Amino acid sequence: MSELIAKERDVVIPGEIIAKGMDYLPGINASRQGENIIANRTGLVEINGRVIKIIPLSGRYMPKEKDRVIGKIIDINLGGWRLDINSAYTAMLSMKEATSDFITKGADLTQYFDIGDYVITRITQVTSQKLVDVSMKGPGLGKLKNGRILSIKPNKVPRVIGKQGSMVNLIKEKTNCKIVVGQNGLVWIQGSPKDELKAVETIRMIEEKAHIPGLTDKIKEFLETNKQ
Image (cartoon, rainbow, N blue to C red; front, side, top):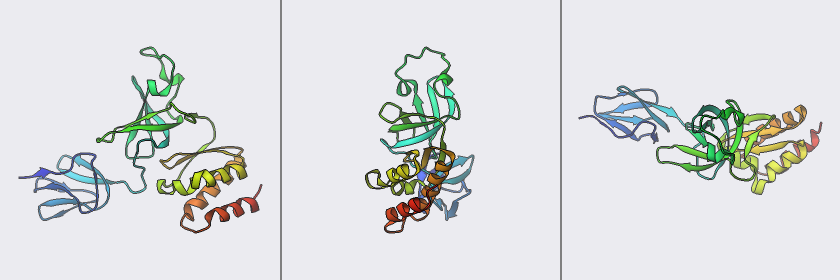
């Protein structure tokens, strides 16, 4: 008798049994061992009829409560806005968590945020089904205007921020840019075109050389010897 061990959208790791029995077939990033279908890499379970495949999570952000994240508005519904947060999961920004304004039923929500807008939010809840809720209620949260968005590997975020914000503050000071680093690996940079490019170059350098000791001194020297 066949049995599904993992559910649709569950996160599994290599070697984990996803299903038992011969009624299911292994798809991408899954394989059969005897009567079991196992995961070949960390990712999300996707079931299409009898075929089971794994959508890789490597390099993607896993949402955590209290994280500050940058999101892109990708959908608008009656209750609020759906955000792409650089993750396998999207996030929901409800009207009450977006603004203190009283919004009448059926109001045009694009007057607040439209599809394609970027916003800085904080994650308030991640359910066991990976439903993610975010809020704009708090200091430093809101719509991001102008500037550019840079995507980095989420596991490099702590290095870009530095201890107590030392690294990102150094970049801000030396490039005259406003910079917001989301825990989800999206970075907002606003300044003159030349200054933005210098900030991007610096952040890419940090991402590439994150493992090197004394990186802060190297970045400081780079910024001071490459003044525009």
